[in-house]
Amino acid sequence: MEAVFSGLMALADPSLLVLLVAATLGGVMVGALPGLNATTGVALLLPFTITMEPIAAIAILTTIYCAATFAGAITAILINTPGTSASATTCLDGYPLAQRGEAGRALGMAAVSSTIGGIVSVLCLMAAAPLMARAAYNFAPPEYFALTVFGLSMLATIGDGSALKNLIAGAFGVLLATVGIDLLTSIERFTFGMNELSEGIPFVPVMIGVFGISELLVQASNLHIKREPVKMKAIRLPSREDYKRVWRTILRSSGIGTFIGILPAEGATVASMIGYNEAKRWSKHPEEFGKGSLEGVAGSEAANNSATGGAMVPTLALGIPGSPTAAVILAGLMVHGLRPGPTMFTEQADFVFAIFWAMLLVNVLFFFVGLWGAKLFARITLIPINILWPIVFTFSIVGAYALEQSMLDVWIAVGAGILGFFMRRYGFSVVPLTIGLILGGMLETRLGQSMVMLDEQWWLMLARPLSLFFFILTALALFGPYLWGRLFTQRAPIKSTGE
Image (cartoon, rainbow, N blue to C red; front, side, top):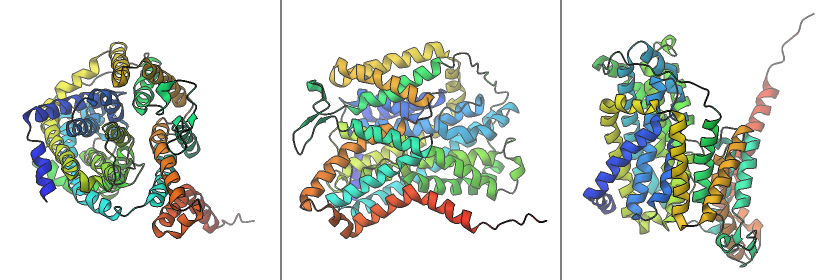
């Protein structure tokens, strides 16, 4: 309990509060821009937080995460273009409401649902993360190795591509993680005589490249697409009757989103789809969905925003990112010398709860921003793409160079951007690559430590209950869907053709 109040006091610094308000506004701007999303915004801002204090740096990154996830609803409602993929289902009912001149109702419902979903998830985060960390406190290297393998198995479902392509991209990320000096043997690998690579490929320039620069190249190929903004005829906010109608939907989707967010490798996009489907399933008026239903907006937005807090549970407690944006935040923790895991909750409890309180604060802030500032931020969508994205490219290059003042980092970012562009073109998600790069180093280190601990008898890991448990989960994650499909195929009744 002392850590809870200490974390709250850490946010009492006026300068930090100003930064959080600015980050909230910046996150809303990022989320409101079609093409940009929370992951891209956090990746672009990450280099500029290097010189900050750890609490301020991570609080700002999580603020961008929460605010941008909410703001994706602004363009989803106004121009039928989700600012983030997590708001794709919001388009289904938000845009029809805007076409009827009820954009104010849709935006207001999105703001309220997002706030409630975010607050529920943060409260669950405060309760669940310390419990999970306490359970993992006695983990030894074999358990950490098995847990990391389980995290890598989630790469099959974390991206937009097929499971096979996601695993290939993740394996390539693990391969990139082998560059540098092996900490156990002191052997240089794939450095090609460059001292800058002795510590491995820096993941911040890679993330800037695959998320920021690759998106620039994608947008450059879509310059011919024109988006017509919708003029809001009325700024009428939702009525009391509207809230009475959707409060069950908001609470249900908040629970769904929090649970989905806790699962490693899922995230807000999956949560929003499930939340929307369940809202339609339980609705008394399912025929209104897709034609302008406030329940559809509420179900989607409560779920995707509650997933943000849930995704931070495995990120902080176990060091396994719960979403693509959480993977970038995990990189930010590592840049500041922080090692996520159970020890963080005992050795740096003040820091952890300061982050929790910052996430709670931002959910309150974007409630007011969403209600009174949505129309203003929607004007950002009028910026021509051929002006916006060169600005983003400039920030990307400056951010990559600012990390170590190294031109090699700039070339790594550019190369990663080109690689990310071709990966997207041929159906490969860039998210598994970045997570593979982060977890690959952990995997190698923990395997080496386990082999030393077990006197190179690797099979003894199967004799440890927790290690065996995570290996079983890994097998189920990789082969479960296939076996499940075969089981139902065999049980399917054979239809008689008749003669």
